[in-house]
Image (tube, rainbow, N blue to C red; front, side):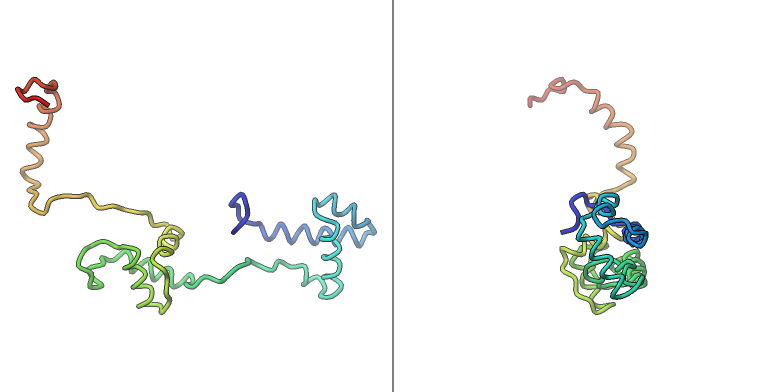
Length: 169
């Protein structure tokens, strides 16, 4: 679920707080006073002291990020980025568009890891990719004919008042 504000935890700061609590305890400061000063529960300070007694200073070190490890490592994500920067047509797809199902297929083919297409979007966002929609253009479109039309005919159409060209709505 994550934390309510969606902020990342500063694990080093949490470790510093535990060590500060232990330092105060070793100076003879009562648990309740340590808890008030560090803005934690008294039971938390008691747990830190117990962990220290059982496992030494190492027991108070940061445990690291909680949760499941990512399916793809940093090196694999760099490889995936190279794949995505190539055209999908190079991988046998009929159109030059990467879709989440296609990316999921390529991840499984290259790394042997299965991702649900719906989760692929989250992965792509963390990699810095954004959703891009292709501009819809007719296959028959003649770019050489469009430019003069845009310069000459389109401004005349824009300036024409509604209903003055002899047509009704």
